[in-house]
Amino acid sequence: MDRLLKETVAPVIVPLDGSREAERALSLAEAFARQHHRVLLLVHVAVPVSCIGLEPTYALSADYLSSCAAQGRRYLEATRRRLARHGGLVVQTMELTGGAAGEVARLAEAHPGALVVMTTHGRGHVASLLLGSVAAELIGVTTVPLLIMPPVGPLSAEESIMADGVTAPIGGAPDLPPAPHA
Image (tube, rainbow, N blue to C red; front, side, top):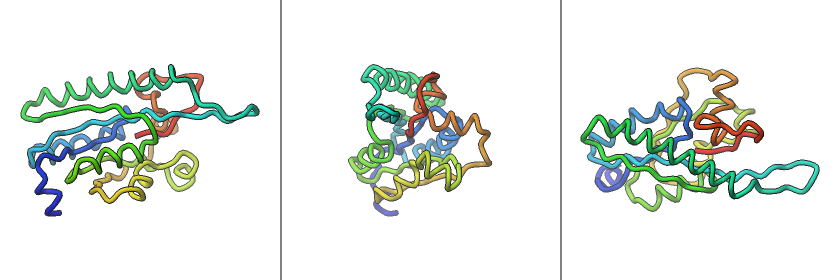
């Protein structure tokens, strides 16, 4: 805890996927950043998706991934502007590409004293096995301090699906399966 509070230049990192559930972490992260004079770093991870069918597995096109990243950047910038309006808080954004938990872990580990604040979507054990849990995976791959907020209540089926699509909450990709993300 001493190291966490001593490193005042380290950011408070908030992985966002465009869902309301992920954004619940913003108020707590913002309060910590203000209280400890930290930068609030909003992060979106565009996750490469592979499709598996009768033909050999193939990765979705670079254009699709680029589109996901561009949508993520627009979403982060709009969120940054909204938070910066309150004044007195430095808010930065970062778009990453790769596995959500691994990318967030690498980012946090590159900033000693960083704190990651995020929510869990609360899908339950079976859904997490099928869809993955970024929060659970992050716990397993890093020793960086994590503040993980539990869900407020069960999500509707639509919200759960949207929370798992890298672009569904911020633009949508109607013909493609949802991708895991942060």
